[in-house]
Length: 396
Image 1 (cartoon, helix red, strand yellow):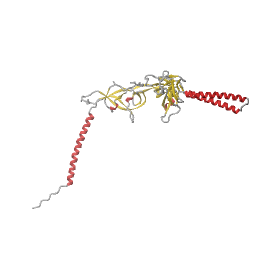
Image 2 (cartoon, rainbow, N blue to C red):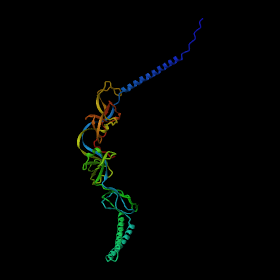
Image 3 (cartoon, rainbow, N blue to C red):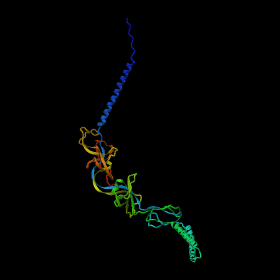
Image 4 (cartoon, rainbow, N blue to C red):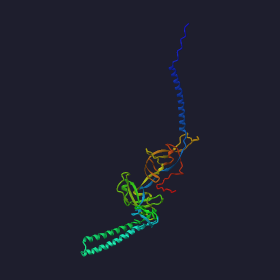
């Protein structure tokens, strides 16, 4: 009777291979199922009807613009200063009211001069005595009773005494402060009985008529602005009012840091409504008019790679299109197409489009961030962004 052959031990390598194959099959099936459902989900969302985006719109229009230059500037007084005193002292009297107009030479304030006046009296007495002595010695000199040197010494002493009198009078005069030019006073900065040091400010004084307007322009405009050119200015404090002036000075050099040059215009200001420090918008004619295509600035999507607009157009619906509730849709729909444009000058709320757009085309003016190419839109123009070449701000 033959002996049964012994069983071979299982091959561990084969077992590991089979286990690895099983794991691969299981995980492969899981990932395949997951990929299948992901694709189905993507297809569902891709084909799901998107709601139309509500936007406002504007039509590109041709307008006739004059080649006006525009700038901003600040009004400055022809003469403006803080009135100060050359000499120190105690305020004895104040002869002005805050805010009043004054003429050149009007007394504004007097300091106490009691000590200086007493010194002046003594100096005048000494000067009189010196003059008497000088006259006497001159007479003696004519009679050859004294030397010429002695006479000259007495005359010099008399002149020195008179100079001291004049200096003391000048010191007393410095303690009477007068308006250096005609203008309007500001707020008083001193009080009666107060000691003020030399150079201390007493009150501000501004000459308001006429008044200067300083502004800067790019160096490219230097040849287009000449002295005598008419300028118009407006200020926020007086909306709707336009003030006429003319260029009276142009800086002969260009600032190397900003590449701008400075200019100054002068305006009549008899009512004093234009005040130093006020901010002003300026316009001046450069000659010529031209037709330009304009749209609201809110229609422009400014990007580093180029400025673009969304143009609205009609498109036929595809068969089978439905709304969000699954109801079939028919007819045309409004869709947007992003288009790159070249922009130019701006004026108020409007911007010039020199390339990429035609007159009569309709562009989106609000809701741009929600849009993409071929997105469906609905137009609601009940509330429109501002689109004025010369907007006037409202003071609230």
